[in-house]
Image 1 (cartoon, rainbow, N blue to C red):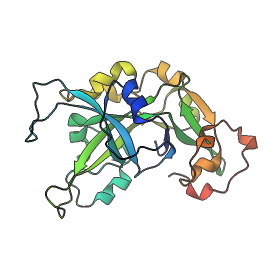
Image 2: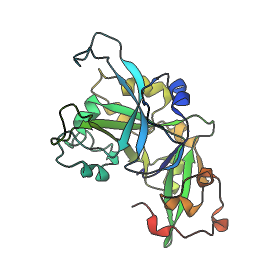
Image 3: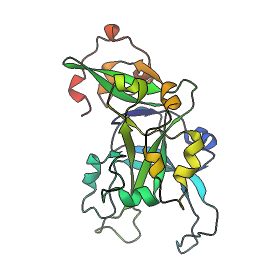
Length: 256
């Protein structure tokens, strides 16, 4: 699964890294070392432009851009947006079958840039937190899907709620030492195909990511302070050897 991650790059840096236009708007995008479900996150999408009436211009090249979305997918047909609290992750194995995910998978895919993600390894009755991150400083790209939801009680011109979900798959390689699931990582060579709005069949992507991509990750033991969503700072991603991590004050807030 993926229940927490770190995202510390500003939109300007991400726009340069992903060759995208920054459309996050006036809302401030904060450095976040402890991204949790229901928070707003930066996503990379690729869409054809629209005309003044909102019609899609299919003949125009698709534009890659950064957008803000709430983490926790709310299907367009949902009666209540709270359903998104249970849809932070989408299993790759069933994404093409379940009504909540299959249309978004075909039509609305995104990438979620991250410095890395947190996972917890069970050690007896305790859980030890690890931070999975790249060794070269480049962002990791989680495969995601997104949706728009409109409140039927809102004014007609009210902006929709835009939400997303991270696709997960079976862990491979060294990651199996920590947890049996992992976010589906998309290598840079696959960004354009994954984001292509004209491509509906992405079944080839739903297998495990390239083994070399996983083997290059650092599995870093970190402080149990990350267990508490209220904690946020660079100390959460610093290496802390398990024996030296004496802070268990937040064990009540472990992700499920």
